[in-house]
Length: 56
Ligand SMILES: [Zn+2]
Image 1 (spheres, rainbow, N blue to C red):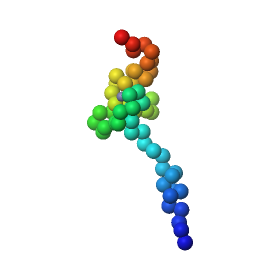
Image 2 (tube, rainbow, N blue to C red):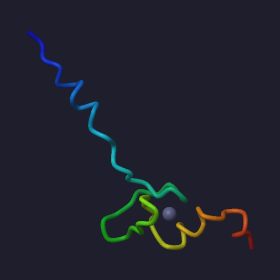
Image 3 (tube, protein in one colour):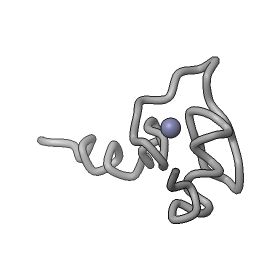
Image 4 (cartoon, protein in one colour):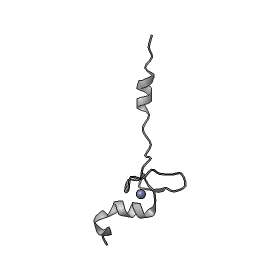
């Protein structure tokens, strides 16, 4: 008889592993946690807050 192991695995939520701003993979040391989301740096966090104002 088959068990539903795959169904249980699907319940596990995926961790956020990439920066929301630049989509780079987050590393343990280099990550910036803000508003329940992870960024690779403070710079990226600011970038995600107001991306239109960051033009130079
Ligand atoms: Zn980033």
